[in-house]
Length: 130
Image (tube, rainbow, N blue to C red):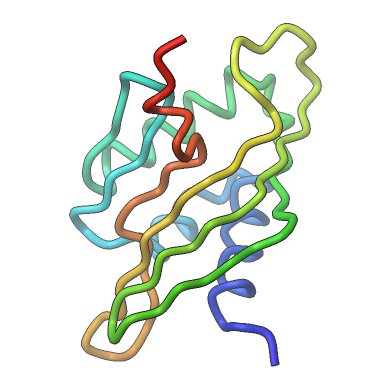
């Protein structure tokens, strides 16, 4: 049986593709953190929503995220998701990799619903010092 977080992440990817950012925010904790790009983070749903709007604009409103291989490590109400994330877009000159090894942290709320607390599509690339 597939882990429920895989299905939730597919729903998030679809919301990003459809630019349905209100629905997307339903999958984040109130104090969530999004790595917008190395050196820039958004904190909280308001900043994260604004960041996704800016990201969509950067990618000419054509971004389509998908996930490849995914590993989920779960401990109680916390899960670490390691995912091979792919981005497609009608933009040829992006400064950022479209093939990423993402790390996500999810927490279960009091109703048992998984919510994203840390969204880092860059993964350990953040510590590369090249």
